Image (cartoon, rainbow, N blue to C red; front, top):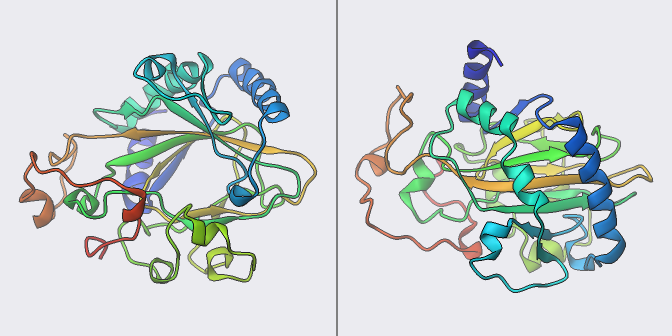
Length: 280
């Protein structure tokens, strides 16, 4: 990217809640990941309850595994996870955009939609709505992700509601907790969690394009209407050092952030995925 392109990507991430950097993943790694992920699905059973997500497989780097993680069918270490997270082109793109103090969870999540798989419901993944971190106008928690095949509406491309990471949307008052039992149990695709909204945008991508998105942004995916599997690899990262703004930030800093006590601790939990008063 040129410096001008990188600044545009930064503005998109801050204002819309996501941005796309084309062609980041190396072609060789992309091909290896297709074969690798297909072999995983030959041996791993995906529970019916996560049919909307498509799968929920956690692949840890060896450095994380050494900290102690129980092995399960859907949770295991593999050296390829570090290859994905430590890609030089990805790290360079993040530096150019200005994603300072980027710290990975050291886990790659495989979210794969089988042929003719259902849509992914609208949701957001932020888990610290009780903390003033939720009030930051810059991202605090992001995912970096790649599709291993080209995506279109036909095979279930990503959908986003731009700006929903900072502005309340009607869905915030309708949706059950993200990935909880209530939303997983929905069996009526006419539910608002699957509806189309005028603010929503489709995000078709080429295999290997890097998606960077704020954990707070509302997103989902269309159903896969083809016979071919459509696989996504996603890794969560913390970014910036709360409550300090990015070094490049020249906008207002919300009072809740300015007055935050860095030593205060706020519970981070799946139970706290409902946006609080910090979402305006």
